[in-house]
Each structure stands twice: as C-alpha cells, then as structure tokens.
Image 1 (cartoon, rainbow, N blue to C red):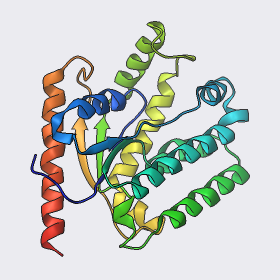
Image 2 (tube, one colour; image 1 turned 120 degrees about the horizontal axis):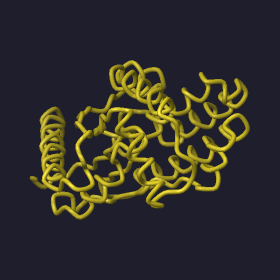
Image 3 (cartoon, rainbow, N blue to C red; image 1 turned 180 degrees about the horizontal axis):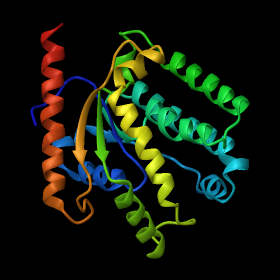
Image 4 (cartoon, rainbow, N blue to C red; image 1 turned 30 degrees about the vertical axis):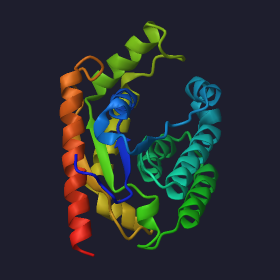
Length: 241
C-alpha cells in the first residue's frame, strides 16, 4: 500500500456475526495498516443481556448507551492525528438496529425522538461542513455482506462454545436486520443527505459468507481490496484539490 497522507476514517459494517471483529483484528496486525488506529466498539454487556431478555423494556436505554459509545469513537477519530478503523458507524446503526427496534414496536415515539435528538446533536458537535467532515466521518464503508443464516449459525456456535454470553438470537432477527442493511447500502447518498451530511462515503462490498476466522488467505485478499480502494479514493481526492 502506498503511503497515504490523508486522514481516513473507515467503518467495517455488517450484521451480528458477519465477522467484523475478526477482520479488524487481522487488519490491525497487517503491516499495510500500521499507520491506522483501531478503536473497538464498546457495548455494555449488562445492557445487552437485558436488551435480549426484555426488548420492550430495555431497547431504548440499550440503544442510547450504544449511541454514547459510538459518539466517543467519532470524537477519538476527529481529535486524533491518525487514520482510524472501527466497526459499526453512527448512521449505519441508526438506519439498521434502531430503525428495526422502532418498527417492531420495541422503541416508543418518545424514545426514538430522544435518540434522534442526541444523535443529531452529536453530528452538529462533530461538524457537518465539508471542511469538518473529513476529520471524523467515514470515507469508506467496508460492508461484510453475509447471509442471515450464516450469521445465526456463527453466533449460536459462539454461545455454545462459551465465547459469547447471552441467549441465542432467533434467526428471524438476523433476517430483519439484513433487510435494513441492504436498504441502507443501496441508498447511501439519500440517507446521508437526510441527516444533513453533504458528503457520502464510498462503499466496498465483501462476500463474508466464507469462514473469515480460519481463512487467512481471504483475509489478505480483503486487506488488499481495502488498500486498493483507499489508494483510489485518496488519489482522486488529491487530484481534485
């Protein structure tokens, strides 16, 4: 990978069990991205377990806690000097998990309005001008597109092998979230415009149905694809200045 002097924020996106954490750990150890900072998503496991035990009661507080964690990561990206990788972005989460919870009736109008108020406040805090946005907003979304049944099988295996906590999530939930992801990825420009963001990130779709945990060669291929796309994006950006 050619040395990239531009500051970049890259999101690895996808359903639960798509392989985001596994891929990010590989990229962190890969020499191609030694100049990047990797910021893990913080999810309060206590809130998460409550969420799955009683979604009607705990969805609002759980999603709000996730929002605050994501806000902190974007502040890290904006205030730091390095390029940043992390999984699950602000817009992505609002358009998938949060929207699904509201549509299923597990978030009230009041809870959604409160969430959106804090969500929009965070966007204003980061800055929505074309000068501010490159400092914090994702320039590239790496979407790990995965069949819902594959995600279901992976999380079931993790829980059975005690690599994760909580109850096994029903397959129907993965199927619903997958539909929201597909809609989000197919309408990036419209969605980012809706939230007052004048720029839209580039998209790299990865087939993540393969065994990402054990197929290191495929990891390397993905790393090269990300590297190539970043070089293209930054070359175009530098030539337009």
